[in-house]
Amino acid sequence: MLGYILKRIFQLIPALLLVSVASFSIIYFAPGDPAETLMTGPDGNVNPKSVEEFRTKMGLDKPLHIQYLIWLNNVVHGNFGYSYRTEKPVFDHIKTSFGATFKLAVVSLIISLIISIPLGIISAIKHNSGLDISCMVGASLGVSMPNFWLGLLLMLLFGIYLDWLPVAGYGTGGDLEHIILPALTLGTGSAAVTARLMRSSMLEVLGQDYILTARAKGVPEWMVIGKHALKNALIPFVTMVGLNFGYLLNGSVVVETIFGWPGIGRLIVDSINMRDYMMVQGCMVFVALLFVTVNLVVDISYRYLDPRIRYEKA
Amino acid sequence: MNLLEIIDLKTHFPTSNGLVKAVDTIDMSISEQETFGLIGETGCGKSVLGHSIIRLLQSDTVMKGKIIYKGKNLLEISEAEMRNIRGEEIAMILQNPTTSLNPVITVGEQIAEAIRLHQRLNKKDAKQKAIEMLEAVRIPSPSQRANEYPHEFSGGMKQRVMIAMGLACDPALVIADEPTKGLDVTIKIQIVELMKEVTAQKAMLLITHDLGVASEMCDRIALMYAGELVEYASVIEIFENPLHPYTIGFLDSLPGRGLVPIPGMSPSLIDLPDGCRFHPRCSHVMEICRQKHPGMTEMKDGHFVRCFHA
Image 1 (cartoon, rainbow over the protein chains, first blue to last red):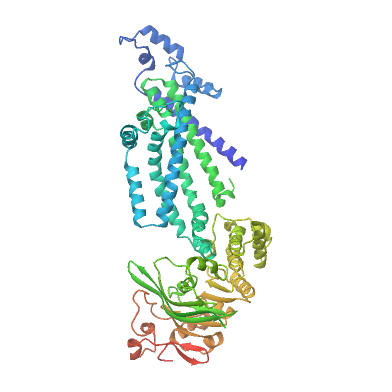
Image 2: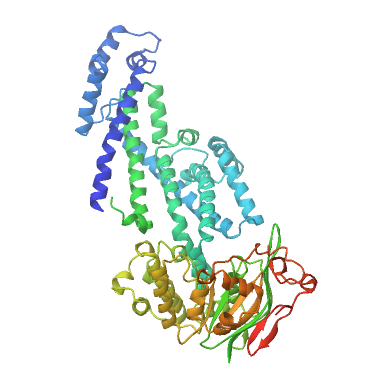
């Protein structure tokens, strides 16, 4: 098992290198010059001397591949560089923003699981009933409804008409009051997808012969569903939820912007707008690292859920 | 004494194409320790009959008649009572061991589960009993194998596990649905021998289309055609003195007897033919066969047949 994990971690290295090269070059070739953007004075005039100084200071005057190698060398030594804007370490910014995104992602995931698992199971058991159809129509609505619109509706209802929750903001360190609305927006959106998956994988499992075997043994129906069926139905479900969590961790730009949530999605967009390329580069690599890590965790949990994979040679 | 008596049983289920009359009037009985073979082609309703006995059918199925087990009508008891009978009193060994075992639960646990449910043993004792059951069906190193998953077993071994699971609570009646389907000939013989041994003290309903297996294991044999029984008698009577043209055709289609197929196809269970259900395929068809549905007649002691010609 340990060997398998080490092997998988080793395989992540080329993927991450590729991501960093790609994002580094895209940023380099993108229009707009960070030095000029940042050195533009309040009067709109650019001082060519200070632009030149900034370029030299940040190493922007060197060729692309040299810039990349310097950056890579720093990263390997644990230094993600400094923000052009604030001149503080990029990693500190990422840490703060990711903390906010992580909180939101976890709460969203919990909301999504609370909604999708029971709904999916009930729809599968009572499939083609009125209940099933209304659940699935609801899920289709949830899938097709854009995040920003759902967010605005929730804001309007709970923040303005009912006045139960704050409309937006981070509060003191992202407290429960402030997290509910953005988490609900993200959670219901992802629940719509996962509930459908839960339903279809449960339906497939319920038609299997081993379910009949369990019933023939005299296993009560709730145990047939909760033990014999669910254990099998969860296998495809976990992959989907893992992927979803990966996306949530990368920060939803739209939802974070609407609700004024200082997460990593917003950090990336703001940094792009400000041509704070060192920050963008750091965020990109960090987000890619997160994504592959979540996938690795999903693959490992897979091996616990499905004994047929567990015993295969890694 | 009869352990199980089926009277006037009809099992119908609605589908989008019409009402499937999978079991359409069956009368039969199984006495204690008797092995009763139910033979028929694919789609004649024999598996549905087996599932009907323990009410293991989709919820919109319509069942009429009586299934009397130990004096109790199984069609009238509650679902909770039925659940206590399933696995404990009447066990079922399903066909296809490969798909009938849960892939993510250990073999030992799948056997122990039934024991825990019905015999109120604790986890450890139930596990021990499961290991004993694996030993009884001759699985080598059972205490180690109990912790393994179904995919680590061969087809024949999985069938042994199914048998161990069915017999775990010492049921009085075993319904075995095609227990030898899909097995190699050599494995098949082993499974037949094993089943004969472990069910010697039990009544069994053996559902199969394999007359060879049935002749090895059964005391009596019934032939089922299009939802009803057409002939039943002792094994010797069926083989030596078959009366129904379907039985004769079935015997002639055996490899040892010339491999002669019965012409035509079994009728759809949605649209059954008028008169005798076998008449479109029968070589002895008479005018009356097209018009009247023959009843079951006793030709000899315990030899019943549903045919005007016999």
